[in-house]
Image (cartoon, rainbow, N blue to C red; front, side, top):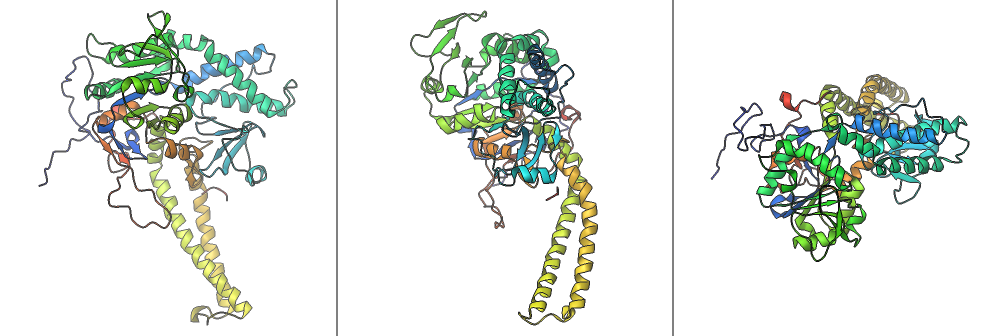
Length: 534
């Protein structure tokens, strides 16, 4: 028996909120989200089997204005370098200069974008792009292997200011303006040291706490998502590397205004762990301290962990013991590809979800460029057919001149006829190339004019996308997207394909929990602002 339920469109009326103080939004379980707000599934995940969900805070539960935060981080870093006597007074941060998922080459002073196999497809030396010949000379025999100390992977949005400053310092070094430094490795190590000090010493975070409205992007539906999960019986955990004072301030700002009357952010979580020291948290046996008051006073933990408490440090094994759960019953959600999802997946086999906020902008940009991208795909199909025919005639000519092989076809049984056909085909291919050039350039700039889409390197998946595939069971642009799916959803991954595959497996899922089409009919509330040379 088939039961037909009415489908509710995105033009749903603003119904009365069951929670009074909580504003209505489009994160409604009866509404199919636009594609940029979808859940994307790499490995089948039955949310009904998940008993506990842990969350990172920064860039996960709390999203920051990237340009504001990274500009201030960059400025603090610049001031530290000025104090060392470096000539950086005129340097300024470019928010489009670096994207997450790139790789720093400490040996050559480059920032590179590699595909899933580790082949470099695009690179900048300092702030200047490498030409095709320069790229081939530097990397034709080199594979990016993140296990080697030469390479540093930009795992998180917090890496943007650090990597851009490194690129600018490379320019100064090449101009002979950094005599105290002796290699590109020295430049990177110095930059990393001082950006770490910038974050550790607290001045930057004090600025954010003093003016959260400037730095933080509140999303009321994040609160709704966690309330859905909590009331569906999930135990919720907050596990963050941030210290208590910053965590408390940020969570109050982003959660408390959107909770039911009399409830605070502390009531949402069964366990709060600050200064967790991830990724070591997932593999070490570090001890816990209890945070006993708002001022952050610490005391030793005697006995087992207790529900509702705030702890400092610790380790994931103790959390599993406290919960009485095994790894596959815990989902951890974070934005750091290594510190949040790689290690928790590798060491504990926790289920994982990665927050990739950049997806929203990129998918909307791709939608806006849909006509051009479709034309490019059509032209490339036409070019491929012409090239195939061109190859066929070249082979006929080769056999004719070598006087071997089967009889030639009637329409091409003389060298003159074959040469004429080859000329016509080459001319047609050249005409297509003239059209392909600007379209390929546009495609390479979707999402970012310098680096293109975060998940793609040329026509292949990027190194970042390979990490996402390998370690994130689910990925999405923000935590609030879980409200579209509900805490009871069964997310099915698509069948992994090979070039020879013809049709998907009958039991496979689509891998996307969203509307079936491209981004379409986006309500105003969800609007987002705003073939390369071989």
